[in-house]
View 1 (cartoon, rainbow, N blue to C red):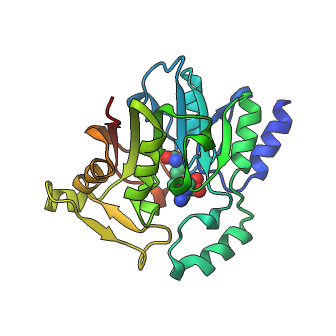
View 2 (view 1 turned 180 degrees about the vertical axis):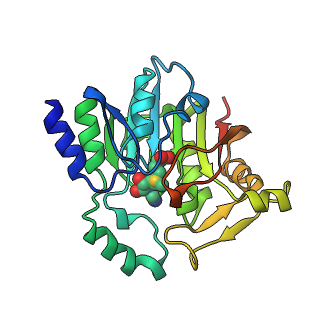
Length: 248
Ligand SMILES: C[S@@+](CC[C@H](N)C(=O)[O-])C[C@H]1O[C@@H](n2cnc3c(N)ncnc32)[C@H](O)[C@@H]1O
């Protein structure tokens, strides 16, 4: 694709979530720039393996997994409002999405073509993902910034556990409550947020974020590190990287 065409297509997409570096020195104007987070969370190389990116949005993590050599599948819901927005907020959020002409998958398609990517994008709710839907079990799953948007994180993690090969790895990067982590470092607690946030259900403290994969059947749940990626003002905050395994 010619650089001018690509620049025009990138500019025409109002709702970029991810900052992605594309050929020709073009960078998508994302809400969050995870380019320095990826090397902290993902292995350097994933050659000869299969990977799954959960809730891919514009595909930043899927393209990073692919760049490291993994045959990658990415999943997302079909439309923005198929995510589990709290019912109270749905009419208003639908209107904003329509006014801004925000379409899930459009940014992914632009970046996918520009990067010459082979990532396969599969439309499915994470609750319903199965190995059959994604071409077989995978070695690595990346699930970023999604637990907070789910009514039932354990149900999602159970479905992901079933998509991993024995010994496979789940890597997560999630927003968490620093305050509730300091107040209750060892007690899993969640802050129920639908009455004061647009998209969030439960903002977990660190202990709850680690409890969810344990409860879903994962082992060796461990913290990789804390991250604070450059973001637009309403998305600024602390994230934690976690790694868990499916037993071998
Ligand atoms: C906050 S964005 C995070 C994007 C990306 N995973 C990251 O870490 O940068 C949440 C993404 O999860 C998707 N999503 C939300 N609920 C989902 C569900 N129930 N099943 C699958 N994807 C979902 C959204 O459509 C969106 O693409």
